[in-house]
Length: 554
Image (cartoon, rainbow, N blue to C red; front, side, top):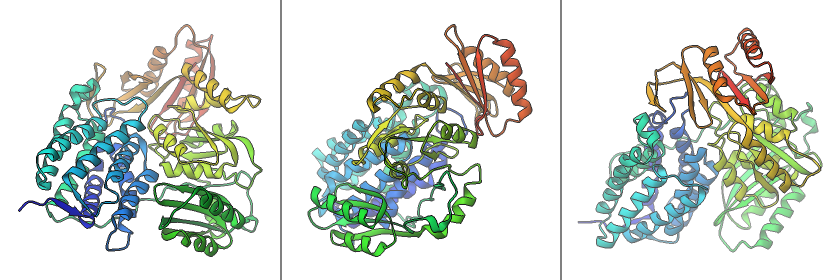
């Protein structure tokens, strides 16, 4: 006997199963990344994104309510989104839940509409959608969903065909993107989506699944004032966070009144509402009053209260470690016109950004993929009317843009810097006497002239851009692909720079990574200055992991 409808309980179970399957396959998906570099992380980003939502769903009271489940999936994935693949996945989930929310039971026709909405939302989130990616796989599944739903209401047939269509589309991605065919892999983001759909199908069919949802790992971000202060100087002692599941109308006046009330209790206010959910963050001496006010709008979930005075000494100790975030809380300072947030990795790189006036540095860690929530936290710490965000990695730009859309009390300007050198150049060109718009235009113009090269090692054998690459080879990667490959770090770096310079070159900046000795850096400096006597050079200790050298040519 065919199943024509599923309950909210079944829907939640299918979602959790999809999340768990993706989580279990993340390392394998990481290995599908086209570039054979040590920081391939599509699987990790997608897993962290969907597990943030799974954690919210798993925390809901039983029996499940459809509206609560949809809100938890949408809000959890939106805030937890990391990397381009994670942001796209969050938009797919958000679009899906928009069509399912409000339904007591879900049939094939509703699911088909939900898949269509998911694809629509994801495509809108990407400025220049590229086929042969997770977007194409989602679209292929949505097209098949519509076709099947028009002919049958059998959900087993429906889900089986949707998974089949996703797999068929995924298999075609190498024919759509030559870079995938060269590397001999399918699109990693598309593979991640297929794993989610397979997990959901397994749950629908009643297969035994481990539903233990492990809370996502908390990032080791640390906010440390530039001047050391004692714990007694902390004005408001409790960092209070919770989510309100709205149970009545929540007007713009309610939001304004709620924010004004929180401001009367403390500072560092974040108040973000998204389709029936309100995320609250406040530093206060009386968390109970904030919680009581929240209860006047609905039920609460994800409550968290931290004693900041007790944590103060631990944070100071953490700040001494080079691999910890070097972030500065500016909320106690007077409001200023313009502030800056930069994503950085490596103690030396972070010191450079700090010296250029960055208010808050988000430590990207090894793969430099902070979440949308990390971006929102940073924005809340910078007390400025207009805040510039420098992602400094092409895989973080979407998360920064997503955070921008959730902020209402500040102007957020995302400069789409794809590399750390681009971020440094953008900051150097900032002019205090110009408007934010004028500076944005100038920064966008300045970063066009920055060429970046990065030297690292290969984690697997592959062939790219007609170049044979063996595991542990030294690779030099430029803005548009592989520049050269060798077996010697210094020689490969010199060859890379030789391919980057041209008749317009004036400045070459070299940032040494954490695995480069001072002696090796000095040898490279001597050879470069002798080879290019007419250029200006800057040699800095960047301290970045993975990449032996990061070089910019302007």
